[in-house]
Length: 124
Image (cartoon, rainbow, N blue to C red; front, side, top):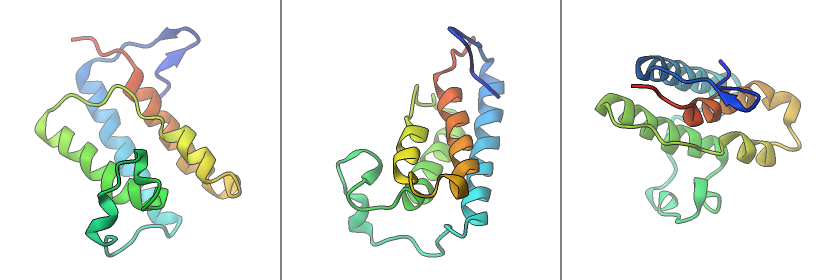
């Protein structure tokens, strides 16, 4: 799904946005597993206390996705809360994976799709 077409963003119905968000969260999780980047045990709790975006100083991007992003997004979906209006996930991933772009291409594609979804206008 592409949330934009040139300068004209595609408007989404809230239910479509929620369904697509759920699909993307599952696909991101599946891709992390496929890449063997899914941890059985979370990092120590103090590593989540970072005040920097994406916990860049304490967690790998894979850890942040698994233990921060995916659970927070799922909690928002479960609560029926408004989703964030942007994320910058793909740009961060491209920096983190600059030496592994070929191996991480599908994950970056999924993160780009999430970025586009979160900036798409929602019509009520």
